[in-house]
Each structure stands twice: as C-alpha cells, then as structure tokens.
Image 1: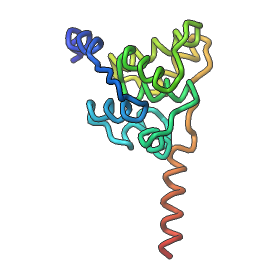
Image 2: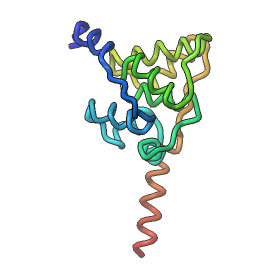
Image 3: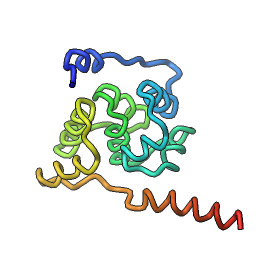
Image 4: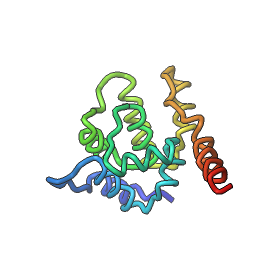
Length: 151
C-alpha cells in the first residue's frame, strides 16, 4: 500500500553535489532504488545499450527520452528536473511539458508503465511517448551476433 507520508517526504529529499554530472546522478538514482540496467531499460522502454551509454557519460539530447527515463526511474519531479538540468534540457510550461510532468509524478506515486502513459496521452489528445519498438530486437540482435561469432 502506498504510504503518502513517506512519498511526500521522499519528494523533498534529494542531494545536489558540486561534482554532479548526468551519468553520476543517473547511477545514484538507480542505486538508491536498486534498479539494474536491464530493469531501467524495460521500465523506460529504452534500449539497454542506450542506458549503458547514459551511465558511462553520454547525455540524452532528446527531451522525450529523458521523460521516459524519469518515468522508468520512478523519481519525483524535483529529481527529474535536476536530471533535466544536468542534461542541459528543461521541463517547460507548455501543454506537452505539463502532461509529461504529470506522468513523471504519477510514475513516482504508482507503478504506471510507459504503455499506460501513452494511453493517457492519447486519450488527452497528446502525442504518445516514442517507443523503442526494437527494444527486444536489439537484445536479440546482440545474441544472434554473439552466436555467429561463436560459430
């Protein structure tokens, strides 16, 4: 059961450090919740390879991908805004941004999935979050390459 007092307290607890960069904060957020690379890839519907790249120093230059990462991380809006800032992006005040903020807040308070987020967006008349349709195909491709190399 969702403990709203714990969630509301958690919403205000996060630490900014002078040496923070996008990848170190992403790793810290994952560690805080004990989320593996594979788990984050599945929960955010982003390829495993992309998550690895972000953890190793690359930054997303795609606003929607960052929204999907925040939803997958199930972080509060303060942490999400900090992650956006470190990626040199920002959550705006336009209608799309407000809808994305709502979804980030929902993901923090519930177990909403990217697919459910897309359902909400479509019902509200917004474009859906992109989906990595080749998410599993990419992993299958890597397995196939590995098998071919082993032959």
